[in-house]
Length: 203
Image 1 (tube, rainbow, N blue to C red):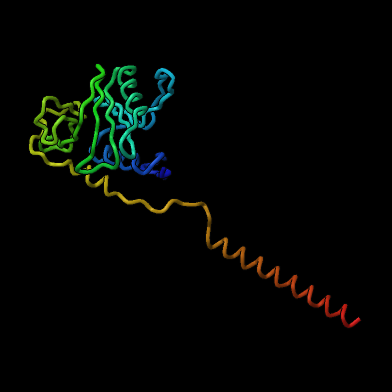
Image 2: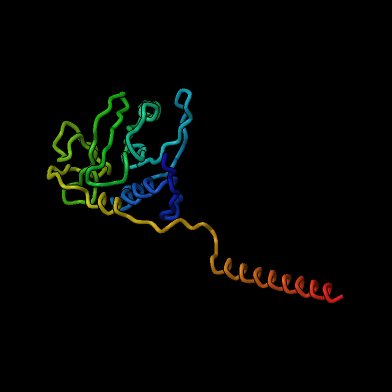
């Protein structure tokens, strides 16, 4: 299993770069969010959702790939317990992002994110062209779901976001100076030992 790399974005330390990219998408789409807002006792599981979007409201779970049975069960239980829908996103934001919508009634459906008509807003819907049986605005003020089939521009931008290598906390310049200093001390000691051996031999 690949270990997640924590990433700090907008002053928040996310547990993975995938989460950081979704947070970037929410910001670009002007979707307010709370990261790991609160925990829930879901049967035998204590669970803290990744994101909460208060303007919907909906919880968002981010997974690196296909969810397992436990993750699906927990997401369904979260929707039922919190009485709010859960949106599960798999992988980084992109044009072909795979999502699952968990309704408070216990039903689940494939989900897509489409842009608002002539606006930066976002809709969750059951068809990529926005013309399916249902569509949920992820902003309260949205009125016209897009039916153009266009991808939300923020999905692409956030999904392609690159990060610097993680800071391992070592000042390499300082470390090189300390190594040089140690080498000098060792050379000094070797010189003294050599001198002492010569004196001992001559005696």
